[in-house]
Image (spheres, rainbow, N blue to C red):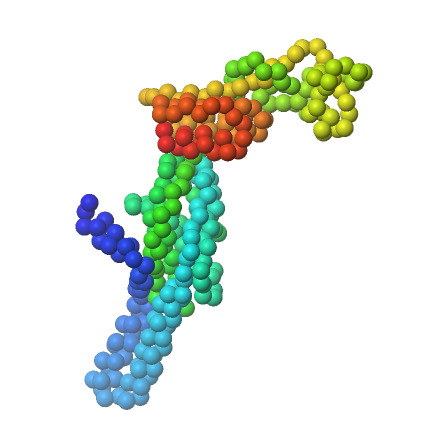
Length: 290
């Protein structure tokens, strides 16, 4: 660890407020100092009074800038899991806040990186598991002469899934032996084949999905269809690992939309078949750690 990294860690250990003049603030302070020298050197009382008044306003602006951040008291931080390069919602539960909330700038700080929060959302460029150590809040209040910032220690783990592709590649599924309604991963308008009006047949042949949608009793005739399960396997030493993981992540989302059961096997874990949102979340979290 170099000196710069060590120094930054020391600065961020506690929620201290740091204030530095901006470019305009530096010009103003230089002007005040020059006016003070001129007023003393030439014994110009009028210029000295004007210098002291300007210095008083400058000091007041400095103190007010400190007060804006000193009033902030965060209770908790929540960062939504997201796909790489997509927007993730950021929620901060504030215990107390000053006015002019729109004047703040926030960023999420890990040990090595900083991610800017814009419109209560953040974008992470790469997949992985991130540990957010600090919430940085900065302000240029009240008139942009001073920049003040504060690091709030937090401990938030964020899962960044592999980048989701714009179009889902074709999914090749493996058939299981469960009776179902359609063997296609991408159903048509009705999700059924060879339907006929109900005429007293066995109840197991009734298409209950169609009845739930239209209220019409129909039965499945002709080919008996089998449900399709999809088994994803992540192997070691992939040639283009990030692309392969992106393809699998995109296909999993497509499976959930089509209510297709899928499972995942990685070198570290095997997740059984499922088709719920919680199951998708579990699989995507495993992918981001591959």
